[in-house]
Length: 400
Image (cartoon, rainbow, N blue to C red; front, side):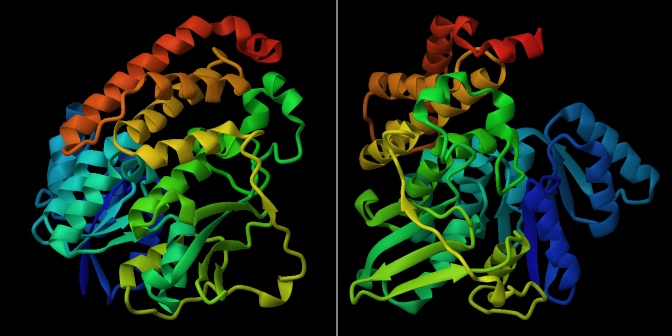
């Protein structure tokens, strides 16, 4: 029986993880949950799974949940809140495995705490690896504990790597759908609206990740994550556009062999793989192989999508540069969605912050958080200089 804690239990990855637990009740037990701000769903999850500990973001929400649990005869579940509460979930002494699925930098401290506590971590938070991957992976190596990727591309790489040794790897190929603007002329980018950018042709995702997919920054983050998870330089990680999104990733070995992983597009599969590794257990998530009729591949255009180029440049330096990349992107994407800057100004904001950020190696999470705060300040200042004057007219009319 594997006992798990889930950071981000009310999000899509958290809910999918609980779905896997429900499907394999003889294999998994839920020990602790970090549930964010959704009090009602946290209450339902506590009723269903009866964890020893549950954390919410806000103190008032924790107090409300605690009262509801006590009134329902579930007072044995301890309720905590804030960053300290999330860390307590990550480090719960009864947990063997921690699923890290809190979106953004908010999940960083708890994820690092889980690694420091000697937990095996299933990682679905790419921002943690982008901002502090050097620190997190170094600690995981010291603890002799694996970080198992849940993100579908890196999970696919992990599976492909079982075909050979790391010193036999020539190249890791990360596939990209190309986003909604794969065939859109770059000359049109200045007039792209948030509605257009959010309309991904393949996936239904959150707002930030949808915009990151449209700029290819999401794939840039995945390049950095791959470098840190698999301890390879950026020159060994290549992005290839694959609009069908059938193949999730490939690994090319030095003898010329290429191993590819494809499967149904269901996040429960990589979650199940991570939770049961090194075993493989039977599931009903089968792929209809006869549907494989037409697969397209093309090189990624880093001139048209400069965010990808900026990610590679930050990956080469590491430290404060990758922290700044993530922070500036989050501010720029939010500004675009709010109609304050144009789509084509997202990479401009990020490039400006990267140019202003001095390259410094970081050795602690507190240093990472300080660098993150400074990069956000610089990005916000740059957005303010650009101002709403540059947003597409259609966006401003819709929001007025």
